[in-house]
Length: 334
Ligand SMILES: [Zn+2]
Image (cartoon, rainbow, N blue to C red; front, side, top):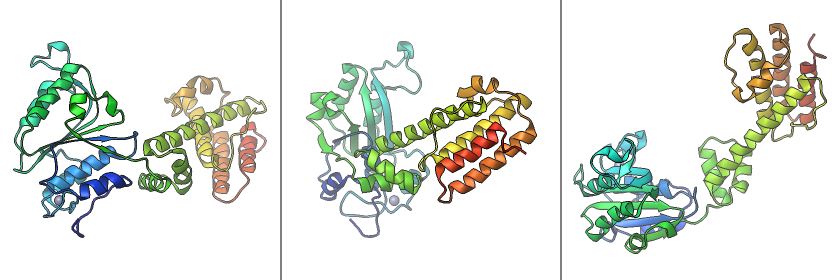
């Protein structure tokens, strides 16, 4: 690969090495990218397409300059006339929409047409079928037409986490490239790029078990349960009960305090402004709370600010939660 060009993917070492050995001449017309969900198959396919459509000269197939007209389309997320990406169910379609296809549905007829159109720029045309689920065998058969007589200059990329569900006739006529699981370091890199902080990056890379999608799901799920725990604690404290479970740990402190703040704001807003709550899933519980004066609310919020401030230091989480508990029960509302 020309040193001035880039190919920005995380992981996918095997597939990268494989494509690095290819030239435009040895590239075949169809590849199936297989592997666990969230290991970078689609990202790799998009970067491969960008490489093939990039105007920068190169010997191999990988690498793009990031500045030509074609690359600009990729960078801005605009539609590239020679790169079509599909996801979803491929249905067998008639020209009239009598079968009830929505405008978004890709019909077999559309696909056949897209596969046979000439390139807009005079170069290649690339179709990416991501995790396509073939509604019927007829739909899949539409693809066979392509394989029987592949039009020159068209590259078909299919990504799937279940290659065994592809028709054997498709599988046997495409080259399968297997994507390995991501390493912890690679997942961490992806999470960092997505804006997760150092702590989340660290725990996500462990929870992901090789998949960035799994890591993100685990992180989001974790946040949800902190929210639920903090909310349960909040309603118990306001009702004058002793909470059954403490929510505050070093990991959950900042997310939990954010939840409590939102609930306090909703508490007042629902009564004063009849505004829809931010925490709509707790509307019933919020409505059942005793009235809250604006003065008391600002006292509670100011103690929450104190707790958030402490949370950024090395405070004992239980102490931060105690400050909030006292404010909520009125013992610190002077
Ligand atoms: Zn370019």
